[in-house]
Amino acid sequence: MDGRKGRRFLVKKFMKSDVLLALKDVGKKVKGKAILEGVSLEVREGEIFGLLGGNGAGKSTVMRLLLGLIAPSTGYFYVGGYRCPPLPPRAKTMIGGCLDNTSFYGNLTGIENITFFASLSSYYPEVAEIEFFASLLDFEPSLLYKKVGSYSQGEKKKLSLLHSLFPLPRILVWDEPWVGLDPRGVKKVQELIVNLNTEQGVTFLLSSPLALELEKVAQRVAILHQGKIKWNDYLTPGLSLGEIYWEIIEEK
Amino acid sequence: MKVTRAEIKKATHNPRFYGGILISWALAGLVVAQAWQDPLSFYLGKITLSLSLLYPMALFGPVGGIWGGTENIAEERMEGTLSTALLRPLSRWEWYWGKVGFSLFYNLLMVFTPLLGMALLDKIMWRGGVSLRLLGGGAMVVLYISSFSALSYLFSSLFYRPWGGPLLALGIGAFSWIVERLGGGENVQIYLITHHLSSFNIFFLPRIDWHQALSSFLILGSYTGGGLLIGALIFMRQEER
Image (cartoon, rainbow over all chains, first blue to last red; front, side, top):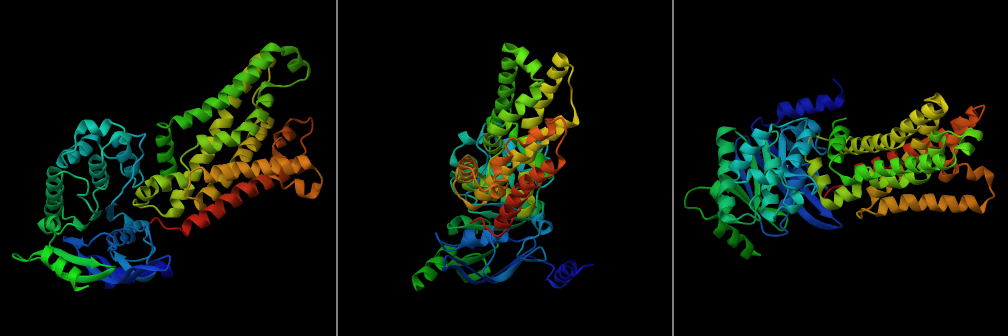
């Protein structure tokens, strides 16, 4: 066992087994401007964790960081027991992602895009499997055979959620999953999140600027404001996430 | 390999992929038309169709190889598909070399498919055929085109504009050609990329000059390998914000 493997083995052994995602005092600076400052949070296995914050709060930065697209300037994070950065491909097999602006090849159809990106995970989904998940998202099966270049914003969003399901990972990190969707689409996405969580045991990290939508599915929420975690707790009946959020904003 | 395989499959949906191959076949068609019009000079000059094809291939191939191949790094980055791909269990290193693998495969396809067609025609018309000389000449042209592809990769890893990398790579080719035409400094000229435009000819001389062949392979190989490696190192240090 070489040193690097040994370190990972120890990390896996001593990392809390039920914590799948963790940020430890993470900071991120871009061109001298602090986007994140001392962010620490943990997402446990089987949990639906929400990250609430306004525009520019740093939600997408947290998501991109956990998905290995960017590296923190300070601190570190864990994905499935692997200390990062860098996010090793083995840890990436556990995590699926949908960015706020996931892009696809416009000259390929929806199904061709899904199979192309899934093949990068060495996974080759059956058409019936894709159509099944598409129906759960209220995504017209005929749309799967149309070029993505002709899709509306909402259809692109549904495709980006859909593509992250092949193969179905242990952790799904979805950045603003209901942006651009109509109320029916939002409801379908929320139902899918709850179904995947309860039936398949998928752990979710969701980000959204909408407290009302987030509290419908999330079990625990952290409020991110100006790059800092301001609140992090379980949601209980009678607790209004929106009111807590406004209190934090007005504290400024 | 999985990235290269996926890229090949994706490219079959891209008109640019067929465009580059079609241009290389059109060049072959022009060579055949020329031989058809003046078969005697071809026969007397002992010029084969395949040898006649290599020069226009080397001349136009860099453009075909750069644009026809696949979306370059800057293009993928600007369209956002690079981030989507990197969500998969791939390292940046793996993705980059997978893309490069496809580009090299495309250059091989673009040169060798019409070349083998021409060799077949040579066999029918002049009882020529596929020889090691032809393979050597073809490999030299592929390496020449690939050195431009490598420069394009290097520059497209630096830029966010899709046309920046290809234009700069071709600009370097044009600059090298002008410097060469200005003459002088023979010791330096050998290191210019366009100096090796006709290096495939070495393989068609009555006696192959292996020393010259090796130096051309080394210089073009350095452009290709060096360009790709520096591009990879730059790409590894970047982030997808």
